[in-house]
Image (cartoon, rainbow, N blue to C red; front, top):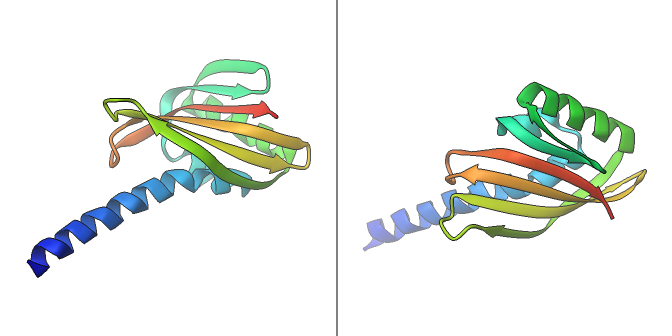
Length: 127
């Protein structure tokens, strides 16, 4: 029985760690930690900055996000809400990014399973 409890507890904490990693993206964005936020970018993804919404390859997406973050000078970021599809193969996260140039609502769209996911959309909209 102890063994079974240990397994269940381990699975729970592994799952919580994964959820925490995705939630941590908002803080990584605020810190402009490009290696952390772009690690799971899809090879083709949607990036929206203000009114510009484009599908880009990974290199273009990294350059666009880097340029935007350098322009707005982020101060802090936090997750506000999350959800997933009925099949649990896609999910979204909504957060707020405070910056020297105003506040932004951030949407992160994710596809895949908990252990094998990729970011397919990253949108920054002024509040």
